[in-house]
Length: 544
Ligand code: ZN
Ligand code: ZN
Image 1 (tube, helix red, strand yellow):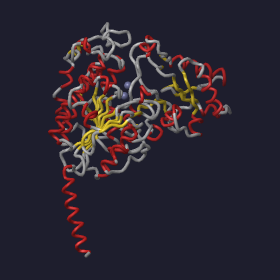
Image 2 (cartoon, protein in one colour):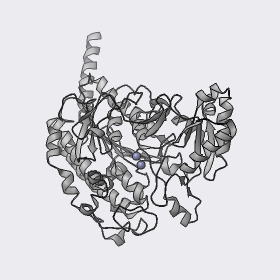
Image 3 (spheres, helix red, strand yellow):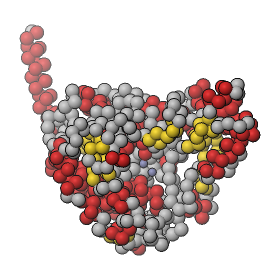
Image 4 (tube, helix red, strand yellow):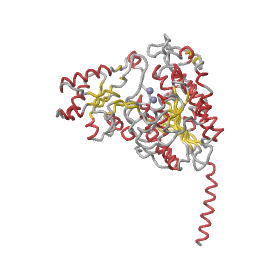
């Protein structure tokens, strides 16, 4: 009896295995795509002219979370990349901004800086990069650990932080050196003195030189860009040496006055270059062509540079997305060939979205404004002197946080909790400031919704400031032209979260989802551990 039972189970087991053979046990490759500054709405606004097989793979063949958000303040690039890949927020992973004032050191630190390492390839000034400031593991780390590091992880971006934070502590990372036009890494990642051969072969082709000879013209007749403002308007920033923010952009003549090789970052050719290097990485490292699941983490930095300069309602931004869409379609076709249809898993997200240009909003009678942080800094010092006498009371005002001199307060026997409160009350007098919270507020209670919750998720006990400001909607620190991001409002938090390929059934959900849910979702799909600081949850509609 027992024997036949065992036989039956065996036969059933074999049959079951046979039935599921179409879906392999694990994907050959995971491709993480972050589009720097991409809003969810772009997937709809530009859809009419998207080709088959680009962004439409996510909206039509993948699973799209239409209500995906950042769940902390501030929404910047470093924290954004860290949060997607670690499944948690700055409160836990420690990347509280792109750069922030460090009390212990008495100076600013950059999120991906590491003075103990040096450049491999590229130039010395761009090589002191590692993920050492990231306090938790990433999903890419967990994939490495789950496979005794057989799985390969490669992070790629023009921005160093867009490559190094996604690659985690144990992956490889390559970024673009804007000084010499090469992709480079640091000794943190690579102990040899020279770059891997596939990287130096790529650099030897001098691809940036050919892009920088191009003229950026719109892909379609300019009169057909109906989803954007007219090309010539008063809200867009300009390249140095150009008197209007209008097409065409002759890169050859703009190059010397606009950052040399760095100019490529501010054009759609930056996306092309990022993909050129991604193809080289897949070939060079044989990603997705071995027995283990590999991970390619690509971040497109150029949409952010273009968006800052021209704003989200510009023809330039629209054209950038139409071009990126076509390049992604080619890339996915290549992956279909190289890795195999259904054999790779892709996700798409952004590291934050973006605000409208305040001057444009004002011109449409929407309350908005530019906040003058230099002026506030001066006023804070004056206020401190009047309240507490001579002394270096305000150590820094940065990232909309005030860092106060706790040691001096102790020395002069001033109640530090009250001092925070005084500053919070003082800043509320300024136009454009909506709310102010003290570090004591954020440490002594748990906020569960709205702005204080977002601030708390971005508040790191050791690293963050003593008073945290929230500006009014549509207010930001910047000039008359161009725009930025960083707030907790939906225009900055609402980003694409979408999955496509291996293990993903097509569908859509408008359930509130956060970017910190991406990593635990991947962990469930890949059957590996969650990153060690995870606070997000697997997305139910995908993993069930
Ligand atoms: Zn960014
Ligand atoms: Zn940005």
